[in-house]
Length: 518
Image 1 (cartoon, one colour):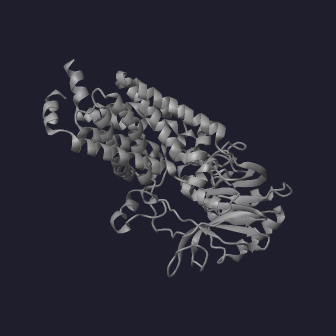
Image 2 (spheres, rainbow, N blue to C red):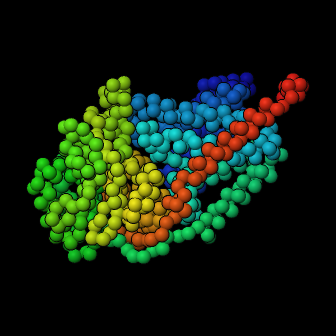
């Protein structure tokens, strides 16, 4: 019995429990994809933080839980970054320290109905602020946002069209908070049940009344996935051979994956001529992705400086060669494509496969035109950023394209996680989205976020034509943007101001009387 007490009060045991509890939500994402688990996955972590003996300990529980969450969601980075993955998880996990403190502040002991009601709005809002901060590209971007675990749930995709993935995260955390309140505060069941009823009502209202983009046609998009091929020349040959199979299949656009061309086309006119001939042969434009060193011509949306550098650029090839503007990738993967503060963190290249040389980045997004089909290209993990697809939709894109390569993480959860993100982006914008990769998973989604055709798995070396419905009109998310984030911030400001005012106006004599009894 004494050993059990020691185990329950040991800070080491508690720290391990916090990290383990924080890791539980990762099971809601692909590859397990237990989307239903997201609605209870935070409860053990919440129960631990609210039961902490002190607010400082609750903040530590929040930090360690955040470390566990980030490490579990990004565990597939370990073979590439090794110990640096843990350090990054610890850095980002610190963002959840205030969240743990807030849970303790509102739900410690026997919370009153007023405290429970405040928790139902404050705790989800604080979670959203954490997701906002860590969504900054320099901190790794919005990979693993809790709401994105709902990518295959129809009503959730309808909610995404109203408030984006932000609204999904907000409501998922609200449900977890309500369940926690039901467990710890029997006297506060009314606000907890009210919170659950409100979530169901909002979801039902979005499903029934949110405007739906009207379908108006079909875009036949061919994805060319060569599979694992060693060497840029051999990969090009394989992609060329696969593309030739599309002759006579009446496709509107052919898409190759990220880094599908390993040489600057200006320096290799022979490759440009082969691509142009291929476009004529299949009767469609081809979108390739050039991963090569080049000088940055004026006006192509790239920033390179004297001497240029290595860019990842989406280039549209027509029957006469490269046509229209090219798009240079804007948001690079930290450590994978550049090392932040290289003078300080350059040692990461010695402990893992961090970038030996920084890629250069583009400065503006581009909408391309393939025979009247206007589409917006993205490269790699840019598909995780809802603001980028929203901007492309506002600029007139009828179709969204993500060119990717997950060959470094072929046998992990990463390919499935990456492919699932396009479902959210499609639902948010009301535009079909195609996710084309070198090694899988390739996928396509309609303007409602529903899957179009089967995935091309990581073992596939094939070509597949997706008939994606196109649509016109705009979603509420495209019109209103990140209103859920702004609303969550306003909630925290109002609750903080109200709490400060209450503390300021409360009688010191009453505090002195109350403190011995609390």
